[in-house]
Image (cartoon, rainbow over all chains, first blue to last red):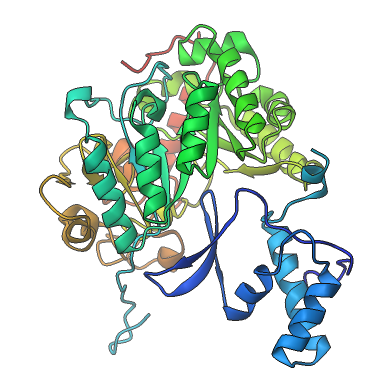
Length: 101
Length: 367
């Protein structure tokens, strides 16, 4: 099973407050930065992360990207879950514990 | 990457991160301080404009992150200006501090300047031992206050705990403390034995049993705190059979700038006596990164002697740590003695066994 397969469609992903999305001009790519970590995003990954505002649900993000890319839903569903799963594993996302504060 | 002879070659990539040692001044005197044993004085330090220039050069070269460190970086009155200079060129800023000089107004200044993250070191979970290790009365209490202030201002926090024989048995309490302080991340760093720590090795070296217990505690806690506190635990390598891939390769992704503007492939590189480094007051950062003989000395694998040269692990661990090799063998080009293939590996085992024996904790404080 791939990372992120178990994620609920009602999850509202948001980057943790120490994570910064940034264009890496020297290498012409998008990266997520956290202390002592740099995660490289491809174009699709960047488009997905752009939609993490803590308000849109996973389901809504998938809907938007399906419309925007004019792509099959299962492909987008897989890509979005893979990115969220990876970021969750890297602890780059805001967690429920953060929300309690 | 391979060339047409089928040999592995190394193309020079731009650096990703830099460690800015803004000053060697520090109110604490930890006996494992990573600063060199010959400290720079305040009058030699790069000034605000010079640091701003270094950060601008670093960003142009490809640096994405700066760790603002020292000594104690908050001992500099112009720290907010330096943070702002990093922000203006798009560099992510991480403040590495002992925390004892932090006040709410200072921290607000740093935050307004664009500080992205704060890392506060603790010496132990309990005040008496912590203050004795740092040789600073009330240091522990002030660190806890600083950590709470960081979180009250909404800044993300990492707690960094340097561990050794005198505090390793408190690891469960250290982890609980980091969680209680509402840190997002805990970095558990085993002492590296060069510089000051080398002078104190017989007091600091943990026993094998301590290391095994601590490794199990850290592993269990990583699961237990998942989603609440991220725990990074680096297994100490002196009880290992293979060396660590130090710095991800010498002159590969990182560099450090010392308070006087000398650029180092690793913050501990000055412990390698006889090695000379270049200064930003004389050369550009780009020139140093690409041309400085000190950076090129241990890049790639061509510099390796045997047993590394013909070893199938050479691309994996890149021969281990140069500073550790020098500290233990007197030759910075030697195979890291942590490696079981090193001719010095047995001596290393004997040394570790001898130095982890019980002694009175009498430290040679950094001075």
